[in-house]
Amino acid sequence: MMKVKDGDLDKLGLLFERYNRPLYSFFYRKTFESQLSEDLVQSVFERMLKYRTTYSGTGSFTTWMFSIARNAHIDHYRKEKRRREDEILDEEQIPGEVPAGYAEMDERNQKKMLLEKAIEQLDEDKKEVVLLSRFEGLRYQEIAEIQGVTESAVKVRMFRAMKELKQIVTTLSEEYSHE
Amino acid sequence: MSEKNQKLIADYLQGTLDDEGKKQVEELIAKGDIDFIDFRAMEQLHDELDMIQVPEPSKGMSSRFYTMLEEEKENIRGSIQEIIREKLSEFLNQVTMPRVAYAFILLIVGGFVGNQMGNNDSEIKELTSEMQTMREMMMVSMLEGPSTTDRLKAVNISAQLPSVDQKAIRALLFTLNNDESINVRVQTIEALTRWGDDPMVREGFVKAIANQDDDIVIVTLADAMVELGVKNSANEFQRLIDEKDLTGATKQKVENTIAVLL
Figure: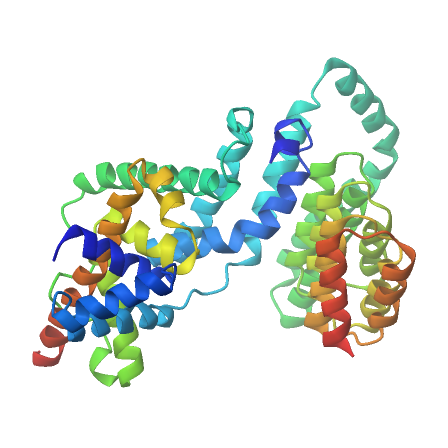
């Protein structure tokens, strides 16, 4: 990234080849929308170019990149929230309703769907801790830098997120099997 | 549960606990300070998160990125001197414009004639074929142009064509071997991979290996050769390792590629 900062923009291609998949996975598991995840990946690399002169090189590149990713998602979420306030109804699933085709799925796919629905219900901070720690292999200290909190707070968030996930999976499983 | 124990479990889940920490967890479970069933359920759930699969992103994501990068580079280069040079270059390249103009006229005339003669299948096929020819001509002309963004666009046009003829493949292979822009060469590999069943493309890829010096291009070529199963590229990759001073990660990648291909 230091070379990109110094004007060798082609080196951003190297960073793209190395990090586009982890970023895409991060956004996909946050949103479960392919096109939106691709748009957000593009937005991260646009921001890297735009703010390249602010890169100090003191911390880890991954931390800097996921901080940008976090902000890109927050900005999108804010815009989306404003847009939705103007709409009376959307086509999303009503909470508590059994997802289409759930009853016909085998046990593994039902579990997969429960996990996805449970992840969706976590608040953004907890969701991020789980995704960055479990899937992207970031250390709690790095996640703490991204979220602007202490490492201890991240560990507590991780524990509470997993506890909440467990609870949501149990509740959803009961709801879906009763309907 | 105390925050101290919560943090201990978080460390356990991430796999960063040392032997002493693990022993501490076992002792807390034995004393009943940590509920064993809850702990196991949480550990199992942590493992099960692997079930959430992520689909492949589309090829368009990569194209959009490289187009954006080239546009940024061109913005930076936009000095007066550069503008004058490009204008001059554009003027010199206007010799290729009649070909594009001819293709447009062909399309309009074709459309008009087709409309006059009624819509039967053979005329529609003919028109489609003419449009395809026109797009290929545009692509070949743009590939020869001075603007990197235009050359990237040309490569992207080729990726959208339902089929390509030998002339278009030759133009793309020439670009792969000679274009000064790394991004154009990377995108060209991805575009040509679509026509990977064509022997000319496969042979062209193998010959192109020796001409590459850039890490990204070599790695992209290696991925393409594995994807297309071009086994005879292994010797060229071996020669690349023997003759060129590749960086550690790239050398490793090429060695892995050879192992997969053989």
